[in-house]
Length: 250
Image (cartoon, rainbow, N blue to C red; front, side, top):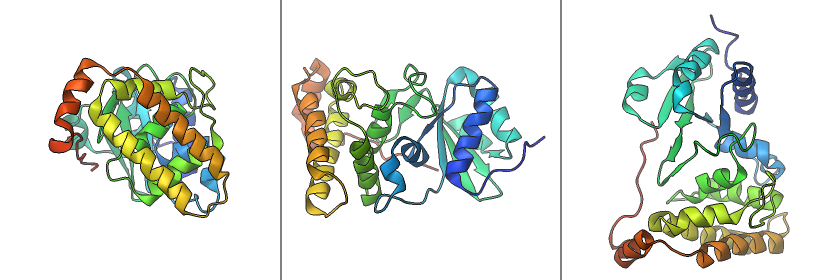
């Protein structure tokens, strides 16, 4: 039996789902726009404030049935065909507000891929800030909306190598992922350059120098990290071969 129906405000709805997941001892975390809104106060202010279409979560494979039961109890309908065909995704539909709720299972797998299974316990109610940042930096055709989300995160979160503070971005984690995956490296460095250009060419109500320093700190860590043999071999081919996927989001 449904425990009330989904709320109209995506941010409130995302929090409702996490609250009920916690009550059932399920390891569910926020990702995507609503997670950035929760983690970065700047994302709630102009010109970074924006609307959110869907709600997005991360979960673990062994809890897949329990997460499905949770969403059904909260008033959602399962996209059974999608959920059967996709290995790292679950999709649910909110018939009240006509929007989707997506689950990433164990592994982020869109334009680029990396494991989240061992990261999911590191913060609450969102995935770690580094994974939130990467989820935007990994977008090949990054939009202005995505760029503003990235800037909002960098305004509110210092960058410090080796930090285990959940409010601090550890660039070594990002650099390690990029040092073994040339495609991810190529897209992330492109995105960092795009964000830097955006910050320098727009009059924003932020400390521009601080944000540029944080961008440069992430880029320096990526540049200095030793690259794997796989990375070096793939770099020879470079952009002559497509280095990313075009994910089907629906």
